Length: 161
Image (cartoon, rainbow, N blue to C red; front, side, top):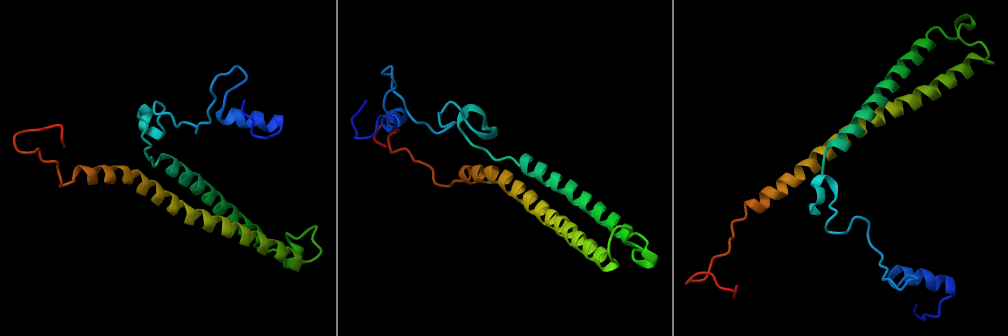
C-alpha cells in the first residue's frame, strides 16, 4: 500500500480503487459491463449496444392503460355528480353543496391532467422507440452506402497502405 498521507481508512479505499488488495493482488475499478466479452443491449456478447423499441412500446402501453383507467374514473365521477345538490341528493356527510362541488372540481381536474398527460407521453414514447429502433438500421445503411473505397496501389496490394 502506498503512502499518500491519507488516513488508514481512506488509504484502504484508495488502494482498493486501483492498487492492491490485502493479499497483494491487483485491484482495478471497472465500469460495469465494460469488458469486451460482455456486450450490452440486444447485441449479445459482441460488445455492441443496439436499440430496441420493445421497452418503449411497453411503457407506452402501460400509459395507455392508465389513460383509459383515468378516462373511466372521470366518467364515473361525472355520472356520480349528476343530480348532486338537488334536494341534498348525493351530498350526505358534506356541510354544503358548494363543498361537494369543490371536491368534484378538484378530482375532475386531477383525473383530466392524468388522462391528458398519459396521452401525450404515449405518443412521445412510441416515437422514441420507433426512432431509436430505426437508428441502428439507418446507421448501418449509411456505412454500407459509403462511396469511397480503398484502391490498391498499381502492381497489387502492399503493406505500405
